Image 1 (cartoon, helix red, strand yellow):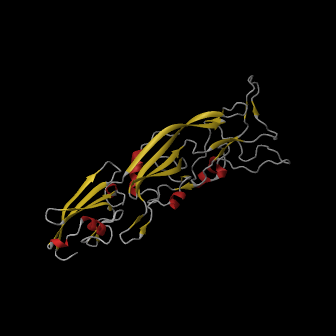
Image 2 (cartoon, rainbow, N blue to C red):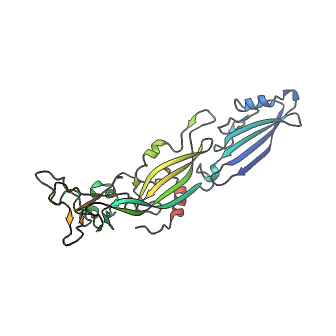
Image 3 (tube, helix red, strand yellow):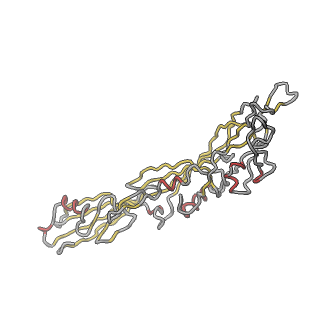
Length: 348
């Protein structure tokens, strides 16, 4: 700092906004020179502020505020700078900053900034059976094994039998074509055509604060708090552990949307989908060119023929643990999310 100068902090105030809004911090320093001829113009002072610094104050927009070589707060980001002349022949330096750590964005103070929105809706699916059997989840690993999504639910690993091989000309379908048997339930197809069935489903959206990449005081870059590589490890997968009070395999990580708040801060919306059939689809076993054909009902005057066998097809065989601490959510955030969702409404 220049000799013969007095720098006094005359104002430091905070103004909070609504939840997920920033806290605005305003600092005002009064700079008085013993020799008034040393007072520079406000324009020169601003240029110094955002470059090498002015009388010990370094305030470059987009970076932390530094005073006398000390960072005021790593979560405090400079947004605006202004310099005006005062009545004492000196300058008033006004620096406006924002921070989000009031909501726990830095995992250091405050409660986490978390919002949860659960939206139930109906989903129309093709169904050959109602009240079907689903694999029994006594083996979490088997939940993500294709061999366990098909059969009659009576025998075999995880309560569902595995199949054998596809039929050939020499050995046509004799009932062992994988997947064996039927998923059970009540046939509702008409002459082999599926019924359009409406099922309950639910989208769960979780909003949290995340900081994007930014430049530190020393000019080096800090990585995005939610890097694409992390998301790619989880998106399109089902839950291997219970989350939101919902069972294993029933929650699918659908997508992430980011909305810019201020500078590098964003609101990240994580979208998950819950489905009562754990996102599996009913698939009829092919009967063309086989000995079995369709399953005829003797004596039915309407001549209804139901598809002989229906099995499950699980499109999402990859799983991920969404409750791993600091992967998608912090431990504190997860605790709040669970509180928002529990107790859940009864699910089939």
